[in-house]
Each structure stands twice: as structure tokens, then as C-alpha cells.
Image (cartoon, rainbow, N blue to C red; front, side, top):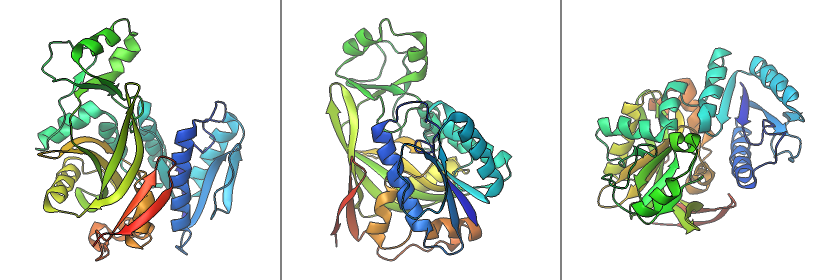
Length: 343
């Protein structure tokens, strides 16, 4: 099987603009991990598109360097015609990931990722909150910034962020409603229309790594996110993969999410706040940075699960018996720096 592993930031799609350093680092790390793992499957051949300003990753023989947008569009269509499947990694912002997934399906290729219907919901934090609340999960109270007023019921302190933002990008923190209201004044309509307001809750920032298929989910690990606040904004500085043992409550959350969005498929990330009760913050309908720790954590090639899922379905996926054996820390530079035995 020939697979286009499409990582958007490093693909050349941004070849006419300066490359965002942190996103390139993250994209490269996930791309290199996937290529390394897929190279061990003798039945798989991979191909990538690559921004001409970047070095080639290891374990890749088939690639196209991209120098301009015309070349990018040409090579993208050539690859779609020449491969059997596409594994896309891209930001959800402005519906980008949804559009890429739709293009793959329109080309009648196998999509190694979530169906665009599920991605369209997960892209919007407000839609996600509504969908999961209906499914009986605890979510954050969410109000559109343009509708928000200082006397709204959302308690201080507050977070203001894009409805379709990725990770901790452009997440602003406000001590109280007065400060947020002052910041809101004079903002252009496009800012007001695409931002939401939520409470900033104390608790442990966490995430789940799931493998999903047709309304079912396997919980692979529970991770801790290391968030730093700086100059009124929140930043993700690292992730400790597999920070706690898998328990019934987290598997129930995974099951409810998969049931609520049955077209989630493959690797899926879920962000949580752990307090008296876990609160679901958002869903990432794609492979996330925590993937980098799976191999270190379990000593197994995670793409085996993905290919088994593709060919035989989720019932055939066998997880290793040593779930919860190691913790793996990934720094903000997207590097695995340590793995320690836990039990």
C-alpha cells in the first residue's frame, strides 16, 4: 500500500511565507515518528511533499520538494492519483483539516483519519461543547465573545480563544470580566465573530490518546500537559505521556466521545481538565504530539494498530499487556527526553 503522509506545515503549502518555527518543529516531529514507524511495515510505501527550505526526514525515499504554490497544487494532485491512502496531519483552523479530508475522499482514496463530518464538529469548540454535553459529558460553559457581557454567568477568571484554534495558540487569560471587557472594546468584527469565552478552571491539564472506529474507542494513554502562563497568554511547554494508569472513568469518557461522534477514526486526542470531575475541553480529530511517546511507553510500533484498524477493524486491535508501564516526557521542542519505569 502506498501512503501519502501529508503534514501540512512542512509540505510546501506555506512556501510563499515565513515558516512558523514552533509549528514546523511539532509537524516535523510527528512526521518523522510516523515515517520511522511506517518504514517497519514491509507492505507500506510512503511518500511526502516537502517545503524546499527543510531537510528531508529519515526513512523516506519518495518525496517531492515544493518551491512554489503552482508546484504544490500540481504535486498534491499527482500524489492523490498515485497513492492508495492519505494520512493527513493539519491544523483544524478555518476548516483546513476538513477540506483536506474531503479532497481525499473525493479522489476516492482511503482516508487514514477522521471523516470530515466528525472533524467539522471537533474543529469548533462551541459545537464540541454542545455535542458532548448532550452526550452527558462535563464541558466548559462557552459563550461567543460578541455575545459575552461582563454580567454573564461565566465566573472569573476567564479564557478567550478562537473557536477553531489549535492547541494553545492565541489562548488569552483574563483575571476578571472587567479586564476582558476592556480588551474587547474596539476589536474588529472578525475577531469578535470567531472567539469564544470560557472560565479558566483550576485543575490538572490533561489529554487522552484514543484509537477510534465506528463509535468505539480504545484508550491508549492519559497524559499531563505542562501549561505556562506568560504575558496574559497560555502556552503548552511539554507533555508527559502516560502519566497515570488507565481507569474506568477515563474509558467511559472515551466511549461517550466515540459514541457521540461515530465518524472519528484512527488516532484522536482529547483535552481535559482534571478536578473533582474530569471536564472535556476539546477534541483533536487527528494524530497529536502525544504520539511521539507511544513507542517509548509501550515498546511497540503504534502504526501496527492503525493498519490493523484499517484492515480488520477495532475488535482486532490488540493492545500490549503493559499499559501504564512507563512515563515519557516530551518537551516544547517536541523531543522525547526521558522515559521512566512507573510500576
